[in-house]
Length: 158
Image 1: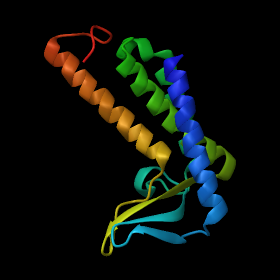
Image 2: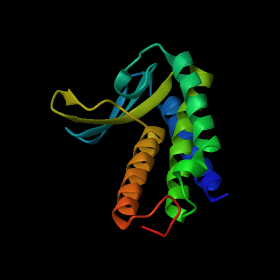
Image 3: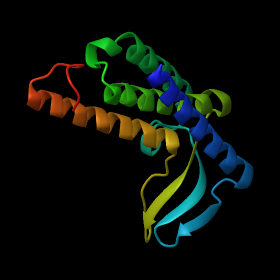
Image 4: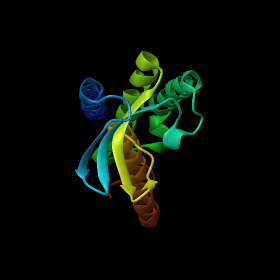
């Protein structure tokens, strides 16, 4: 239930922020937050991270559904019952679902967090993308800690 609550919160926050961007920005319109470093900028991404596989929203939606099924069905084989591992699962699932909703509903993902330095832009991203990266990163750290302690998934807290 904890993972589901976390996932739901991520999806709600992600979809709310995307709603605000769609409602208040034209495509490619930017609002400088930290001039020369960070803008809110409406981008429509038909691909995956960094625009890879542009135009492949149906294939990416299908892949997202497969990944969700794998995470849910096989979670006990790679996740334990510690709160941090359940947090990782919830954050990752929430991120995947957030972007999946966009892919199905809009045929693109709404990205709006635009970091840059001079003419060099890091690819724009959103809350769901952030959640997936944070969830995976945290999972990797937890597994490294478990490995150093000689624990298998679910044994003890990191």
